[in-house]
Length: 558
Image (cartoon, rainbow, N blue to C red; front, side, top):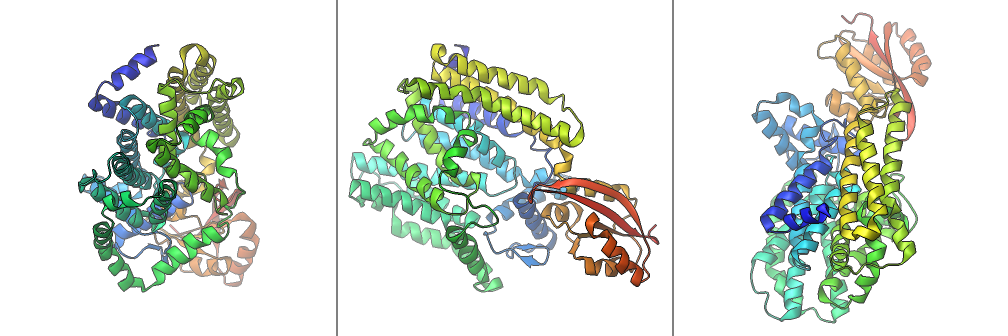
């Protein structure tokens, strides 16, 4: 019962709630934040693009080396560039090559998303369930993973919650008393968040908000509440906020950016599964058990209460936030686990209200499902430790106490659910999730160095004793290699290796071992002599296969 006492204290005031949410979020997302190397492919790609912006001073064009990257707007790259420049200004010039600096916007986005989830929830429920909903989001597995990656998703989530929190307040006010939502603060939050969402990920946020609004209009058979959003002034404000960037990118690329971003990237994902990310309907529903752990264990138990309240305005809005988008995500061929992350805050609010109101189903089979509080920490922690042992022989001993504590708390959450109640069990499971994060992300994953071959190759370069080398890679072209070894790293093919080595001097080439016999013949024909350096064995995580890279250098190299 001490857990409920702590919850009482946390919910005693908004200031205390904010402090608790900030601490919990940091505990949930910081383990591994600094230690996990650049992750291919999206994180390293975004970071390298941001790095090149800082290097060149060009913050309009979006490029990876010499290739244009017209898939996403530059919003996240600007934020990452600011983080880099701030770190350099604080006397950390090496931070330009440190991936954790590029993750700072994601960390701040996670904090903002948690606090905004609390603010948004207060529009629908009382302070205690609002606090519980924000806690659910902060400790959820997918949320914590995205906060550790230098990508768009965590910042975008905060923007989504801000927009939907404002829209929800307006909707409920107009539903209760038409014409009562006359202020400009909430419409300003909504339309500013819309502009920020476009700068982060293109028009997706416009489609999402339109879907929520259309669902409510059809359900209520009224659109009058939309007028309280000040749509005409709001659209004008949206255009004014976006116009400088749109003008700059059009002047630089013509319509090339929009053809790539909307035509190829967004519509391409709707038409067919892109980049081997296709999956059948039901994919997100199955993954939900793990991705929204630990609160996912209570989702089915809360469903009957939600259904009984479906005609209530606040429940109707939250269902409009969740259901139509979830169906579309399941039907769209391209699927990635984090796509449904913007739906989790609404799910958390519905679960939290059912928990604090004592309205969870008592169906014994659904209650038995809470065994996931024990099984998921057990399986994930065991898999992480086994992975470290298998890949490196390192037993990751520091992970063991955290893993055992997580499994123990998960077991107690499950076993005492019936006697202590859902809220205490969920809080205990949340502590288990945080400890599991320390074991898996803070200790075991950084120890799995073969999963990060670019890091091993960067270490080999540092140990080569070759100052400011020219570097090439043949057979391995992940963005993390360019990020760690420098923008000028050549990603070339076997036919050009001899030309790369021929000038001699300080040159290092990484070559797929399977290509080495062919390359030896090419070098022999051109009279080029080289010597073999270390062999880097690893796993190309983004492509799912093992690699073996040999470092070569001209014999004339110092």
